[in-house]
Image (tube, rainbow, N blue to C red; front, side, top):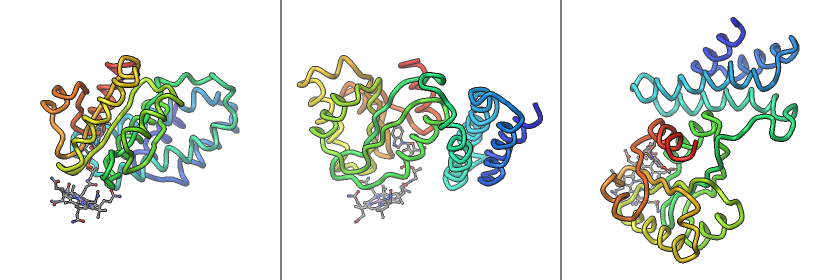
Length: 209
Ligand code: B1M
C-alpha cells in the first residue's frame, strides 16, 4: 500500500518523526503490527542496506535510517505477543579485547536487526572469557567479532580457541570482520568473514536461516 511505501521511503531518507507518524497512522487504521514490520519497516531498512553496498548511502545516513526504523519498531514492540514475529536468529556481537572501535560493529548490528535478527551487543574491549560466559548464558546462533587494529585481531583467534575449549564452538557460527581482517585470516582461525555490513547480513542468512 501507499502507506507502506511512504514508510519505507521515509526510512531511506532518515526521517525519524515521519516514520513514527506513519507507523502510528498504520496502527490507527488497524494494520497488523506484524505486517507493518514486514511490509513497511523491514523493506525500508533492506533498501538502505542495498544502497549502502552500492555506495549510494554512507555511514551517517545508515545510522539515521536505523534510528528511523527503530522509532517505528518502538511503537510496535509493545503490541507484539511473544513469538509473533519469529527472530531470524540470535547473534552475540562484540568488539574484541583491547579494541575500542565500535562504529563498524554498530552498523553491522543495525543492518542485522533490520533483517530480523535478535542482536545482543556486548560492547567493546570484550575478552575471550567474557564472550564464552555470554555464549553460555544466551545460547546464540552466531557470535560476531569486530576488530579494527592489527594488534587486537589476534584476540579473535584466542576467542575461537576459548569457545573450542568450552565445547561451544560446534554450537555457534563465528563471523568476524573489521578493516584489518581478511578472509584468509578467518579461514586460519576457523571463522567466517564478511567484508561489510550488508555482506554480514547475506552471510548470516546463509549460515543460520
Ligand atoms: Co582508530 N584506528 N585508533 N579510532 N580509527 C583506525 C582503525 C586506523 C586504521 C587509523 C589509521 O591509523 N589510519 C588505525 C589502525 C591501524 C592498524 O592497526 N592497522 C587506528 C588506530 C591506530 C587507533 C589508535 C591506536 C590511535 C591511538 O590512540 N594512537 C586508537 C586505539 C584505541 C583502541 O581501540 N584501543 C584508536 C582510537 C580511535 C577512536 C576512539 C578515536 C575512534 C573510534 C570511535 C568508535 O568506534 N567509537 C577511531 C576511529 C573512528 C578510527 C577510524 C578513523 C574509523 C573507523 C570507523 O569507524 N570506520 C579508522 C581509520 C579508518 O578506517 N579510516 C581508525 C567506519 C566503519 C563503518 O567501518 O569499522 O571498517 P569499519 O566497519 C566496517 C567493516 O570493517 C565491517 O563492516 C563495517 C561496515 O561496513 N565490519 C564487520 C566491521 N566489523 C565487522 C564485524 C563483522 C562483519 C563485518 O562480523 C561480526
